[in-house]
Length: 129
Image 1 (spheres, helix red, strand yellow):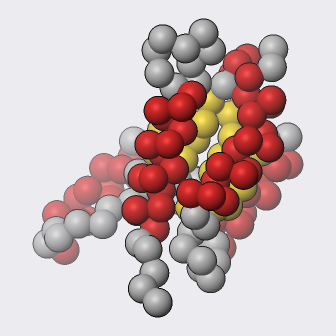
Image 2 (cartoon, one colour; image 1 turned 90 degrees about the vertical axis):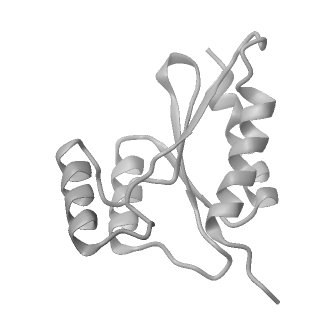
């Protein structure tokens, strides 16, 4: 069975949430965005080094989740996309622990269905004043 790439899972989840909860005509329009925390491109080693140097200098942080979802009163949920069977990196585990220690919500999702289930569980956190 062929596995769906992580980027495809993340895109499906972003599109579903964005189209359902983030449109400007909604009374309570939420925000979802990705955090491009690295580079996955065909760059030469020199180009890669320059790009990573720039990203690090401008605030790239190892372990930040793939998606951030913002709601009322500045509330935020951290959502990390993984393919089924994949594990978090050490940096991602450290970031999850830090977010939770600060009282934040962080979850890992493995499919669109999994994302929907978890986000719907936390929707009141994002939408209740």
